[in-house]
Length: 544
Image 1 (cartoon, rainbow, N blue to C red):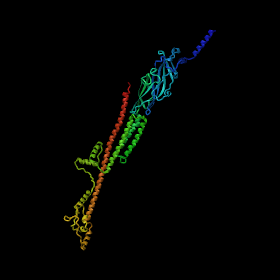
Image 2 (image 1 turned 30 degrees about the vertical axis):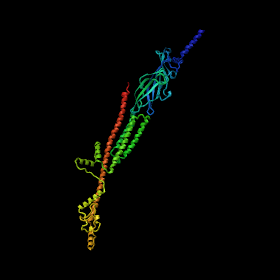
Image 3 (image 1 turned 90 degrees about the vertical axis):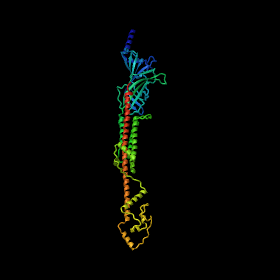
Image 4 (image 1 turned 60 degrees about the horizontal axis):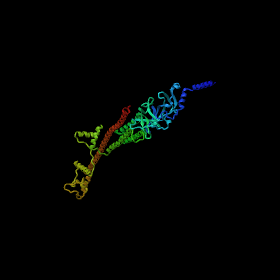
């Protein structure tokens, strides 16, 4: 009877054990006496060697003003757990098992330069893969999980937008020093086999290095894994939207500043062009500043470029004002001096500017040793006016209108006692005979009938000598005034032509100078940046 009971109990236990799957039995056996809070090493003095690897999936954002990178990556951590070892022969040769991440011990791997403090917002932990290892009598743990890391990166934007950035992620344990957990890189670079290409950045290369760092707070060293990304910016967007428009605007402004004439024939509207161009350049400068961090340690390359273009446009506006002043000076009526004319001729040869017709004529006459026809205007004075009147009187005398003296037999001369005063043409040459003193009044006349008849006959003449003399003098005065006015007008026209020509010469010279400066700045700055990229790819960032 007892043997029958024992047989029944043994049969029931056998059937119950056969009803439980081997995998569940294995899990129960592994976790019944397992504590995930303890470091899984029989010898607590030994560190756990954790192997770390990363496979980069996508760069989501690289923020220049706030200087951080947001990326998506896949992380794999590997280590040995001595408390989870099992013999596959006891469990139907099961050598691999997957357990939830919260049921086993996990290393507290932390991204030191992370900007997100909550771990659940950084990584998503799932299951861990366990593989038994009979030689080491431990379970080989592989923890795979996706992450979105947001970490700080000090960006060097001196060569923006032709810059190369070096960003480093630092991983290590936060609570265990080197004697607790020792980290090792699984590979010497970050995996990029599944990487989705970013539109703004190109990965030059990656590397992973292991460093041992001693902190002042702790007696033992910490093992740090530094994962470095070498990124080169793709500058096409900034070339199309910033550099090329800035260059075109500046070049058009230079051409507008130094064209020989404008729509209205004057140059005042060029100053308005300069102010409008400066406003547009200020808007482009604001676009660049929005992309840059607020720092005073350096100015990015594109900032130098736009600033140089602003200086060029500002100087062009100032020079245009000077050219306007040169052009306006011709309205004064003063012609150019010989020294200024000589310098202007030299600059005209340099800028291939033709000379004005009257200057060419003067130049040709000088070449043939001929006197130079010039129109000279001298300031009028009392002496010059007096001399002109005297010269007019002399011409009148030579034409038969000779001045008469008091001894003349013409009765008209003696009609008035003031005849000699009226006939005086100059203080130095009074009208008198050789033997008569100056200012002598003739004797009074006695008028009789014969005299009256004679006077009436004389007064009926169509024109007297005295009237003809005064008419000739007035006509000569009018001709002299008209000649002088014509001379002033001609001289002013020549001055206007000369200073207009000088303004054209200065315009062309400044156009050549500013175009050369523009191309030196544009090509020089961009060539310098391209050299930086070439150095980054060939020398500084080449693989060791």
